[in-house]
Figure (tube, rainbow, N blue to C red):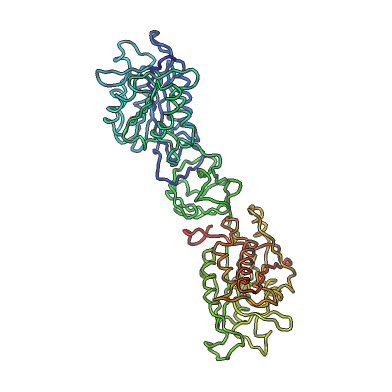
Length: 619
């Protein structure tokens, strides 16, 4: 094993936010790479002075280090500005010219890395390290390069400089004084001041350990997405010590070694990619919020226009919907097979009509018509308001939620409101309508009737609201793309069943693929979710149990596969199970049913959970 008199010198300019890296890297910690990074990489194996022993690996190592530092996926150094000097190219003049040109261009918060691999020796007279260029001659002090006097003294005080020396006698004992004199300089050396740097031909030496460290995600010890000089030292130290049989001990010096970044941590195999072209404002945004969580962003625009989220996005990105918010805009994505793609919200104009009645005794009736003959309900209006809040969180605008409570909940008002969604009506452009009725229901001569506020038992079918009108006249004439009728009323199931046929719901799949979602939202839909069948009273407990389950389901509990999108099948499954459970506690039976009017279309309404930080919903 030959002693390796190598001063491995690298200057790395901190990477620019517009580097050649193939995507946007998102870090949840506060670490930030330099704004721009360049490198001067030097490797000398044979010298013009034949008295200097030839070294086997410096030029090979220098090539590999240069490749690691300028790797588009992980390297911080810009390959277009970085310099590689090998063998006879690495003269004293060429080295000093390359280094000083980079130093003179350094701006605040930029960085330079100098890598030198070749012979080196301490210079006791000035407590400095001499790096041997290709054309070095005795006396060495005049023709060598003094690390401190010739290189570091030229470094600006507002930029970072990383010196990595793979050479003999560079380490502890000399580097502490250098780093103390230059607060923004970090020094990583291959050995201590009284040790050789081994020139191994079997690939096991300081430089190969360094390269391995720069290309390993395990080196990112704090998980901030970068490999700092300190993390590189901690990671390569055991590799060097064990491979050299404790004959060589790397050293580290510098006040800011934890802030000096050498590379980006390699992307894990399960990184998440935004595949489709990204919004223009992302490249200049200083803010990024993913699913309500603010993240620190290091922007590195690539030709592929991809956004890469490190790791599996635990805590940020789950299956299904992902909400991305920049400083100016909000966007919706869908995750599937570890990739994310833009998701177009299928609903541009959503309306809700909420009908609820507590006052069946009509104690506050302005027309003083007396009791309807049905028991007062209590809490139905309160539950309807809770449903109102749930729908707002699901992207229904406040001014698109129409409420008809108590004395306003007449059959005439319900009729007039639904007609606004017919051709020529005020809301004919709506593409999704949620209709809810909370109150009594009954059957008269086989016809299901919703007991509205103006109900007259002497004229039940002309004063109440006929359920079949929802199934026939309104379902057929509404121009709305998709409608869901949710009825929390006794006898609703059998009346709807007679018109629509058997229930259509099936058990939800473990994970709904995007193509299945599209199959739900693209066709027209007239969906019905009813509290029970004709022979089952709708269970009431401080408001309808069906309504309470509906609210809880829309608030997220019905999202059975945690994809932030609630399909009708999921909503039915949750509400049905919850109502059945609550009914069993009271020793009664109530079976929620879902029906679909196939004559209009085979689609199913979906509800997209909104990110809490988005006030107007994703666009």
